[in-house]
Length: 45
Length: 219
Image (cartoon, rainbow over all chains, first blue to last red; front, side, top):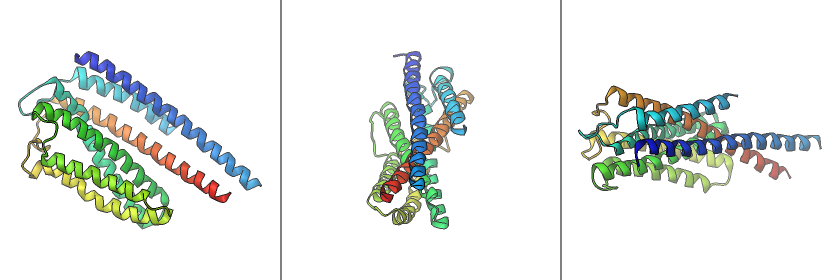
């Protein structure tokens, strides 16, 4: 495999890793806001 | 917002680093030879530096926890140890691939290889030790001591290639061509950004899991 083909393979792998990181970022944010909601509800009770 | 900016920066700089390392920059010249497989050096070098840096952050976080008794420093220490372990594993793998081409074997028990393996196991022990203690404050206090002691392995690994006789070239004696340097430092920048992003996520996830535990305990 030539270096150009290797570059394409690596770039695709990197994009897949990045999509995972970005979705992780969104999920973590969502989970944090849901935890806050639960804590708020508990405080009110 | 800050993390989104960092994520965008990371995405672009990693693609540039890949382009530089695989296409734009020449393969690094190591011990008089220039082979395409040596391009793995563009991964191996930044992974090594980020691994050392992450473990240094573990020691700093541990020391700050012992001084201030704020659990956020303990979380930073733990997260950087996890990220450091990941990079340490990658540096061992990329090093072995390079060793196969340069020395003819994947593993030679060279001083640098051996001390890096010791470094890996030292921080694996740190993570295992933390997992064995349930009480949060006690875990943070004792793990901080281990986190500070384990930092000894970082200079041991780095200077093993400088002062001990072995096959690994000394990082202080290596001479790089200007374009090779461009590739190396771009790649280092990309891996530093990746390290910060990973430590951020790891810290955040750890913090959230502690909050969930607190909510469950309140029930």
